[in-house]
Image (cartoon, rainbow, N blue to C red; front, top):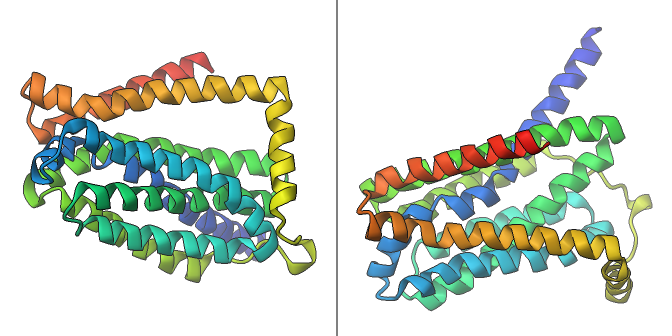
Length: 274
């Protein structure tokens, strides 16, 4: 391998590592604050089921955002959409750290979910723009690995952050990670969709494509099976911290270890199933 090839490979893997870091933001935003939910319920003077809605609206924002981010990036380019997404993630995290009411937290968590959707969709689009089918699978497997490891460490970090600095510090950390992501997007991520390959944004065309997908029985069955699986997972996530701490009396810094065990079990079962 000559020097130019080695340099190109280093640049490629440098980009993939950056994309992996940005991809980890969404699972961190989901899992890092789980151990803090009981404390948030107390400090914001609300009930556990209302605090749980902060995860529900994040998921809704994440799901709805994906429907529009892709078509918009096909018109404007990938880089600007990813930059807007990381900026919105940072701002929403910063505001979440300062809210005084649960209603404000719920609203900005929904915005944070939309921001997470933009980064997630753009990562896949950028890798697809840059690589062929075989290399695409190789590069995405590394990014998925990072996304899988993030939920493993996020509750551990969240538990200790909550113990020593309070629940608001979790969102300050997320805002800090968002700032790092903005810098990385500006510094390392190129525009991968040239103007000649772009198409005008048309809501009607996107809606027709989505309707076509929904009408396909195979696509519909896959969507429902995936939705059911995620519904079961999120039902556990929003309730586990309250059960661990309120029912079993487990300290907040140990709750993260239990979540990590759950994630490890999920990884093992997924590997066995595959």
